[in-house]
Length: 485
Image 1 (cartoon, one colour):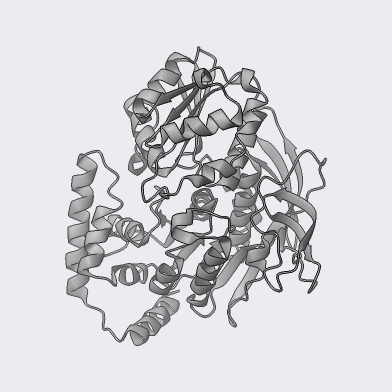
Image 2: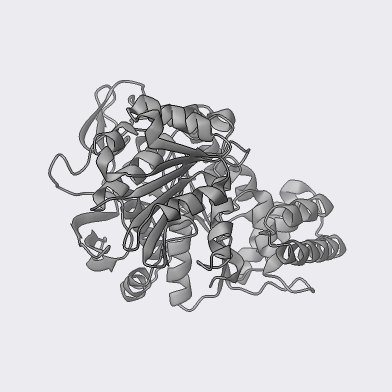
C-alpha cells in the first residue's frame, strides 16, 4: 500500500509541477483545526469554513493528507444514496479491522473533504486512520478524484438533481465520466448496472469494474416507474425498452436501435422478504456464492445502497462473513430515515432533494400503517439547489388519495408557501395544510398534533434537515454528528 501511495504522489507531483510543501500544509492544518474547534463550540458542524480557509492556504492539502493513508481512499458519488452507501462501506471496513475516516455529515465538496482530513490528523500532520471513505458531490467529483487519486470509486446512479447546478442528466454523466478518467491506474470502479447512463460509460484501460443490480421477480404493483429521467439509449439515442423498471429509469433495459443492453451484474439481489418489524431478508448472488442477509434498512433505494456496499467490499476481497455481520448492525445514516422516540411518539426524518428520491421516500412512508403526521420542509439555499421547480415532478398526489391517513400536514422552510401551493394542486384543501416557515416551530407544532403512540414523518431538504436535526438534538433526541460513533 505504501508503494501505491508513493506512486500516486509522484504522479500528482509530475502532473502539477509542484513539490510538496510541508510548512504550508502544517499551517493550513493548524488553521483548520483551530476553526473546527471554534465552530464546534458555537454548536456548528465545522465542515465548511475550516476546509475553505485551509484550502486557501494550501490548495494541495487534500492530496497531501490523503497520500498519508496507508490504505488509500474510497470515493462514493452519484445523485442519490451517497451518504448511506458510504456509511455502509465504512461499517464493513471497520468490521474488517480497518480504522476509517469518513465525512459522515454529508459535507461532500472539496472543503468538506478537507475538514474531515484535518479533523482526523494530528497537529504534526499524522493521519489517524488506515483508510478514508469519502462521499463526494457529483459536480465536485472530477476535481476531488484528481486530488485524492483514490483506490476505488462507487457510483450509485444518475438522476436529475439541482437543475440550477447540473442541468439534465447528460451533464451529470459527463461529470462522472471526467471523474472516472481522473482515477489512477489500477483503481477499481463499482457501477450500478441497472442505470443505463452509468453502464454505458467506458472504464479506464487498467482499472477493474464491478457491477451490481436487482434481479427480482415481483408482482407488477410492487415496483413502478416513478419519474423516468432517461427514455433514450445513451449510446445511439434510440428508444429504450424495459422488461422491468424498479424505479425511475433503473431496471432491465435494451436499446431498440444498437442493441445496447443492461450488462449481467457481478453482484445481484435475487430475493426480498420484507418484515413487519422494519427489517427485510434478502438473498444476494455473488460470483462465487450466495448470501442470505437480514437488513434493518427500508426502501427500494436502500436495496441499491446495500448492493453497492457489498460489491465494493468484494472488490476489496473482504469476506462474506464480515460483510454479513456489518450489514446486520447497520443503522440509518445522518438524516436518512433516522428514527427517534419522544414521549411515546416516533419521529422519522428522511432527506428529500429531487423527484426520484422524494417519490421513493413517499412510497416508503405509505408502506407504514396507521395515521401519520407530516412535515415537508423546503429550503432553497445553495446546498439545496436554488431551483425548487422539482417539487412539481414529485407525486404528492399519492398522499391525497389516502389523505385521511394524514391528519396534520405542515409546509415549512424558506419555501414553505411554495410547498403549500404544491399541496393545493395535489388536491389538499388550503385548510388541511398548515404553513410554518420556522423549521423548529414546525416540529413543535407537529409534535403537539401527534398523540403518544403516533408517528411523525419529517421530509426536509439538506439545509432544512441540518436545522431540524439541531432542533431535535436540543430536544434530547440524538447527538450532533461529530459526537456520534
